[in-house]
View 1: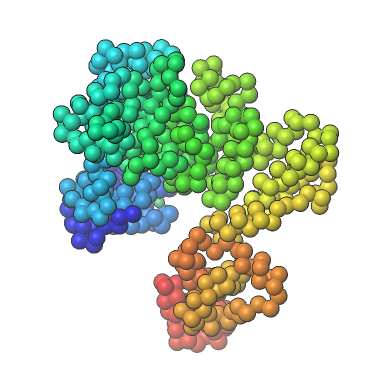
View 2: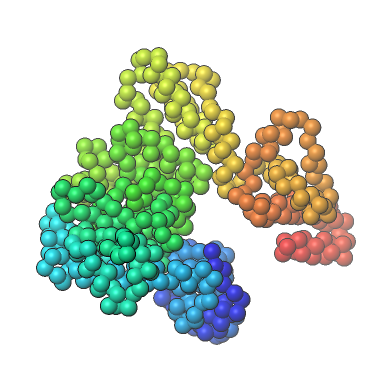
Length: 532
Ligand SMILES: [Zn+2]
């Protein structure tokens, strides 16, 4: 990933006024040298969000959010630094000298022009009419919705798309890199022919690739997708995220559905917070994309065996990322589209009252015959495997109790798989544990920190030498962050916390003596440590 060079970052900062960058999101009022408004990161009635153009920074005195234009766009648009850089570079008219960007630029360009051409074919050509009919009459979509998702149509021809795009100035090699054409012998032919085209966008709205649905009954594959390209990787994009990202943030939840049609029809019905994995099982990368906007997901999967297995995988992933997960109980309906066509209100109730995933899973097993010993054993194993992944001990125990009640088996007889919890714990970002436990865990996992933070460790009188193997194992498993950098930050944070505690204790004792000089000294020391 490209991170930008300092010159470019500085250039963008000088060209853009932070007030202009923030104004579309916040109504700002001038007060002296600064601007004031209601904070966009927390809910408030009187403004405590201050923007200082001279310094190019913002700060909220209510929730503490602060930063520069890049931080603001990252937070507000849910993009990473590279994407924020790109967005602000475009706004500032600064050309980024990307290291790998040059290769991908043409692919994005090819996709962009193809998308435009497909949209034109859908709305403006005779051939496109049958596709438009299908969308409007069979799928009951209005034109505004179709346009919102950039849906188009690829003409049923071997060369119509690429010859048109060549006239627009595209190179055939770039179209090949974008997966739009297939090379054969010495020629090329269009990959997408006679299909309804659904573009996949990245979070900033660039076209990554397409999912294409045939209109012919006798065609082998109902859907074909753009193959893996430099910019399109299966399992790393979410259909509908670009269009629905605002809705996801506003509703503070994402509805995860199976297909793009579900995303589009739910959006038209007012549920503008759905996304679809797009032809793969839900992946960790996709959940991480969702997590930029919300910590709550509602899953809509088929209630068959494949659906239950997909759900179990999703639960494990969500648990690793500390995402709350609920399951949409569609009852008699086949899919969300089906439910919405029957009753929008009923669908809304289903979304609002979606049961917690673990409850859903345990209850779905209730429907099965648990009288046979083999079946009981199998269910106990399958559900307890999932319960093992819960990192929070209270919730883990709660669901274990539920399972034991459903099965009529004592809790102690249900075996939680150790490997599962180990795996889950080592990957979860959130860190729980006392300062001492976490510090020792980090020092065991990253022995090089012992020398790097020797002084600080000494001051906190932490003894990280552990004799008991069991204790050592438990502590090693404490979650210390995803990588060395996270762990290091956490270590410093925890060590500092202990140091401050010690200093505050000292301050209390000195206060009794009334020695003002000593008190001042300790107070300033505490201040100094807090700034570290
Ligand atoms: Zn705030």
